[in-house]
Length: 253
Image (cartoon, rainbow, N blue to C red; front, side, top):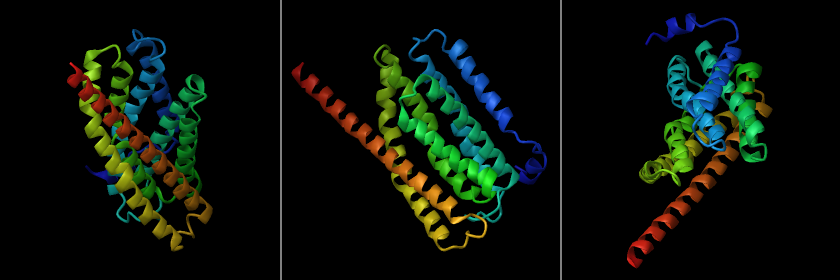
């Protein structure tokens, strides 16, 4: 694909309102139309998964394309138009999902804090320093590469008590999803953050990315990785516990 042609055809005006409107319409369509037959307490979750599906995998491909469009690909490179577009696309999603949590799950402080921190990183990169999107987009790829599996897993988990199909999907999908998530969040993510920290701490980016900005980026990402590792560790514990219980039940029979 000719990325130069793509960048030259990008709109000059800020596309963020357009992207946000897209996610808002999709969320409302999911809540009132696509999932209208679902139980009322499950419709917000399903609608959140719908916009997450619209963001996650496309964001991986768009981020990859935006990174390839940058010939320098350095941690302190100026943002290209395509990279800024991808950041706006993600900012719009996190804004919409943040509103979802504030309305339906205001007590879920962890996810609300996650979204606020993510928005801070994206917004400072896109609208404050105008540099460093290479690092942010690589982190976005690592965060969203498991999005498709995670959303299907989430929906199957929500329906598994009432649906044998959903229960089977959950059982089949859980091991490969946990493995993929563990590799990305437990190994690839920390390795890239180490490279990111090593570069920024050298001072080579201080002229374009103030120290307080990159320090806050690294802090947010490290906390997110630690929480992700804790989350998947709990899923592994639950997985082996359920497997052992099934083995015991079979022996009793």
